[in-house]
Amino acid sequence: MLALKKTERLSLEQHQNLQTKRFKKLLRHVLQYSRFYQWHYKKHGITIDNTENISVTDLPPITKDMMMDHYDDFVCDRSIKRKNIEEFLSRSVNPRERYRNIYTVIHTSGSCGTISLFVYGPADWAVIKAVVVERVLKPKPHFLRRLKVSFIGATDGHYAGVSLASDVPGLLARFLPLSINSPLETINHQCNAFHPDVLSGYASGVHLLSQEQLKGNVTIRPERIICTSDPLTHEMRDTIKKAFGREPVNFYAASESLSMAAQCERRENLHLFTDWHIFEAVDDDLRPAAAGTPGNLLLTNLYNYTQPLIRYQMHDEIVINQQPCGCGSPFPTMRNLAGRQEDFLWFDTADGKRDYLHPIVLVELFVAGLKKFQVIQTQRNEMLMKVMVDGNKAAVLAAIRHRMHEIFCGKKLDTTVKLNLEVVQDIANDPKTGKYKLIIPLKN
Image (cartoon, rainbow, N blue to C red; front, top):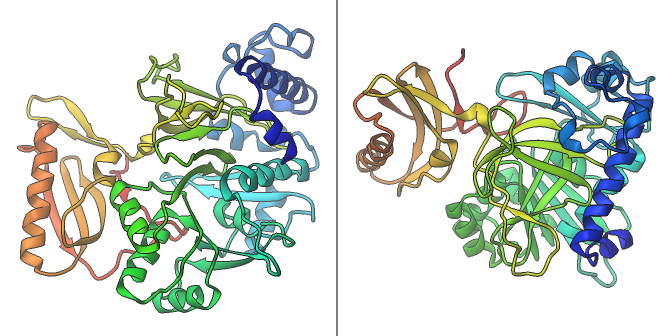
């Protein structure tokens, strides 16, 4: 944490030199210990003997499939085996339990259902915790007692969010997990009894608690609110602030790195932690995206020496801002994540072309009386919206149809896409990830 504070005082040139130094060290490490990177880079003429003149953009990108297909050769500790990790995960549901009492293991699945594994050694995990405590949690001292931290989300497995939140240093804080799959009454009771100083978790889960607070079912006053995992929309942010009297902090983390970016006190953009990462925004052909335009993220994680990720295709869409933030931080900023590329919905337009609905259009959808919804593409040009509504059902459904018609018109889809609405009492979370899935695209 002291080293992180020192880094934040470096000049831009010193900061870039530090990033380059860490990149070269990681590159030499993977060429020495990872059989996958050895043969993968050798095909491109890169060996441990010529790393000094290599920049990150000289290296070929890697994908999730490449990593998982060669997992045992990918990791740098050759005693780590994919089969053994999967056996460990099949019996362990405690996110604080370590594989072989050493390694932190994170598992995740995308919309395609492909399971991915990410392993962090003790030194790797120490960097994550230091970054999160210093730059995201920012604890205020409480005399005579420890800080009380709660996390709402999937808690019954080795998910990224709960694995990180549950490992808050014991001398610093007490921790309470709130399972998003528990009955709402149970969550409310646990939250009121614990009365957290820090409320963290899925943005949708924190938003749910804010709604319960406004109803009077929850009566807490957290000093800091941290939202991650799913998008924090403007409507959600406003509701959370109204309920708790605090602005939530948007925190960008993923299984590939649990400490990538966070909002500063200005709450405008997310600061990228470029001392421990290299972020590249590229187009579909993996060329650098034009300045200020959206691009797909290539991530280089500079602290994970156990399972290194160098130019890893994340499929998150980001816009890296050119202007520095007014808060004075040396870290560059990016605009809020718009969604994952695989969540785009593609349809036929009236003029015979194909066009998409960007996930941010649906993420930001607001209709009075619409409590919760899920979008499922059921046919090539047909979409089902499962909706939970309050108040006059007919009026709410009419308003949803009107708003969706406006969205379709903007994409010339108003005459080609059929919208079906289904009123439901509940929308279940994805059983594999424990997360709420807003958009389910058409398979194949």
